[in-house]
Image 1 (spheres, rainbow, N blue to C red):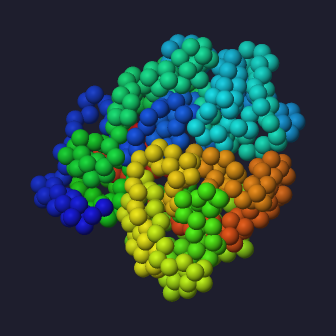
Image 2 (cartoon, rainbow, N blue to C red; image 1 turned 180 degrees about the horizontal axis):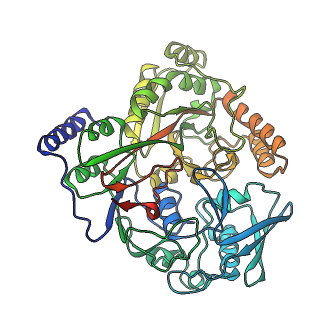
Image 3 (tube, one colour; image 1 turned 60 degrees about the horizontal axis):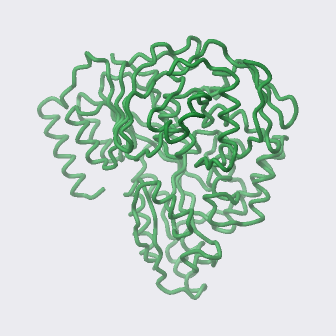
Length: 506
């Protein structure tokens, strides 16, 4: 964000403080207006991999299992119990009396159809790593199913408690992902009443939401989700009373908004890690990145500590490997570290015989952090051309091998397992721009090993190789700042999920 923008926001905040704060909209209609900076092209949980999609998924759909965000305890949701029959067979008893938003009753048929559809690679689920472990689902009776995995997959429970939402089989078979996007039907605490694709999603409280869910029945009647990529516009709307809740507020704006009497600013550590990804494949658009000395130079060029303190704010968690510390298998023990040392970066470039390299740096959020990296790289003799765009466009460029450097942030779909982070970027699937066979084999072994200690040891070895070969620049896990109307009861969680069903007006 430019200094001019910061100054304009500061002036607006000062004016509002002088007159007593932002105007509060009357909440007689018991509604909430929320904005996010991403554009969601498809609300079907299986056909997007952006954070707003995860938020909508958890709001509108239910999963078989629920993980408590505070205790990490697994609790029954659409499944009342579950047990492993063998290393590749999971049996689940299902809940009776649940209805989808269109009135259809929930049964085993919904689980079987959903899992068999998304597990079929031909249906091209966007985040394949979330479903490619599913061999098939079988109906045992009306409220009992078995899930067969392609290989031992001990993290299955974690995935069933996260991104694996359950669709109504009759409706999904009829309308498919396109129809589900246009007129979504779930079984969750809110139902979508209108989806203006890429702009606005309107939700209404599900008054018939089933009793006993770990998600309590919602209190707020209506929610409007607006997609506003420009964060300056979001803040202006908050200050004028046009919005009630925003997230991902930059640290300097968060500090300013704390002075506004009618607003509350909440911060919290998140699972979202930040790292710089380098394309080292044979057809990389920047051949210099195939030289380990160049990659080491890029690591030494960036001052992670200063970026964390100045641009991320309180509660920042530094990382040395690309996973979140709480995730099963995440460790930085023994991993090579690269201290900030621009002189060493220049020396490494000279040793590699590379003079004044020029690289495109792709990014989609936290532009101020990307711009800081551009400046650090320039100071070390590397010209980085910023390519800033929406996430879907950036992802397409990366998967098409057209991006040399990418400023990635990854929230792992809030899955507390390394298979949802490291394996996404290094196991040979869509977002892997390294394709290191040794690391792929290690991660495949880690993802499928049942013994917990053996899994951890294998992941440690893979993470060590990634660091040693300087394939990424690990930075930190983001702190997220939220700004909300002061009279909104709201709690921030580390999984970056605003739980609308818990919120209410004081």
